[in-house]
Amino acid sequence: MADTKISRADLEAKFREVQDGLQGKLEDKKSSILTVVAVTGVVLGLVFFLLGRRSGRKKTTLVEIRRV
Image (cartoon, rainbow, N blue to C red; front, side, top):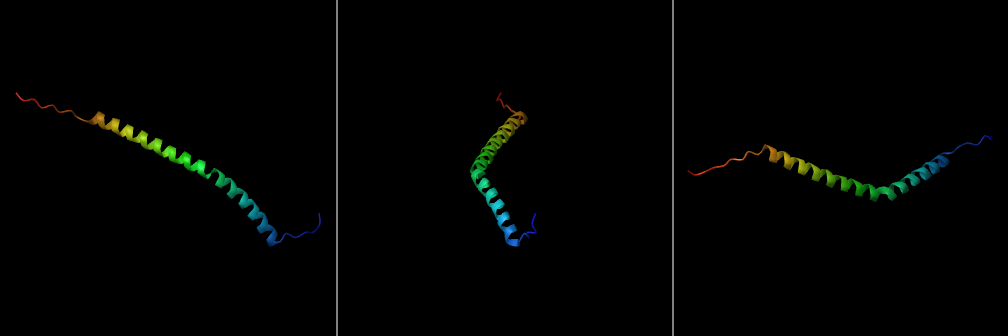
C-alpha cells in the first residue's frame, strides 16, 4: 500500500454519500410507516373505546322504580 493520506474532503464526501443513501431509503418508506402508525392508532383507539364501554356496562346499576 502506498502512503496515501485521507483528506478531510475525502471523509466528508464519503459521509455525505452514506447519509444520502440512508435519507433516500427513509423517504421511500416514510409514507408506508405513517400509514401503519395511523391505522394502528385508530385500531387501538377503537379497542380501548369498546373495552371501556363494556366495563361501564358491567358496573352500571339498574334501578327500577314502580308506582303502587
